[in-house]
Image 1 (cartoon, rainbow, N blue to C red):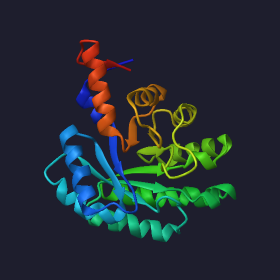
Image 2 (cartoon, helix red, strand yellow):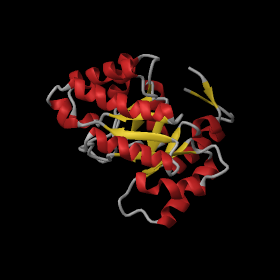
Image 3 (cartoon, rainbow, N blue to C red):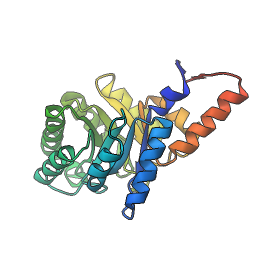
Length: 236
């Protein structure tokens, strides 16, 4: 266990708006909330990267572009182009969705090549990389194999879910992913994390970043917990 201040807890959150109908005004609200609460990143669709980079200029809050989101069903070349383009216009983190078709075909060489391609682009530009598994469609065997590949390729994070599939993050998946990447790669939990209790449970399970559109609500709940317990930290 360790003690977290409210700012340290905020810095675990990727503040998210990935809706297809998100407006420029929605992005302004998202980025202002990220500044107000000092979240780690805003998680947005690639097309919003330039606007969010402008809105967050001069802060230490990252711009996280989602690539091939939410299905992952584009070619390696397309994902590579979109990754380069997102970084060019302002993204400082990349969350890309793996190709589920190739996972189901057990084409692990393809999955490794895809991961290496995007991770290498991110490294070249000093940008963080995250690999989205979308666990709701995977068997435990497939999750483990993906984690083993990630342990070799070494993206910065592997991530549970897009939040747009049939299920989101689970405690069991976070523990399984963490077990098979160890300390080599971090784990991001995303999808369905909407309250402080779930947030804390995901951190306890091994997640080191949380993707959520409920970041403001979660931090306010955590502040209340601290107030009730007359403390400035939470033990997780």
